[in-house]
Image: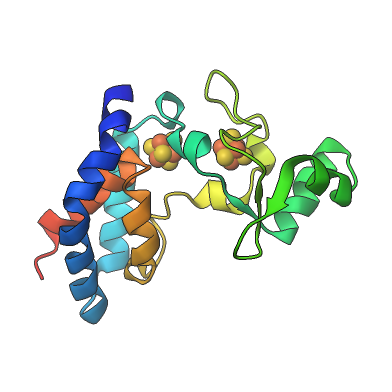
Length: 164
Ligand code: SF4
Ligand code: SF4
């Protein structure tokens, strides 16, 4: 897995133009069964991929924290929300709350998330490959294939399965 993670930025860069053109066509004419296909590809890929052997998302990019995330996680730590924000978060250029630094401070050396039960929504949903209307998040996906080996494989499989 480590080998694949190290090669991923290069592989993603090589595929960038091909992926961009694929998603452009997909947006114009998304197949009727796209949601079902994405569900299938996502489930199949995550049967093969063990996130505990990877954790590259937690190591290299952090989630954004919604107000609800902040409320829930502060409560978990029995901290006032302001204290939680001051201790762990900062505001990014898009005005979202994000981690002060990566790797994520809540990631353990064993790749387990120490706040798994209350983790941010963005962490629960990453890499978003099972969401409905997947073609609408193509810009995000183009970035995620350089971070997430599962997302990379899913997009490669999409290109084989959807002829456009
Ligand atoms: S979601 Fe992707 S990047 Fe994150 S741990 Fe799983 S395979 Fe790795
Ligand atoms: S909160 Fe947990 S799942 Fe989210 S980035 Fe940190 S370690 Fe990973």
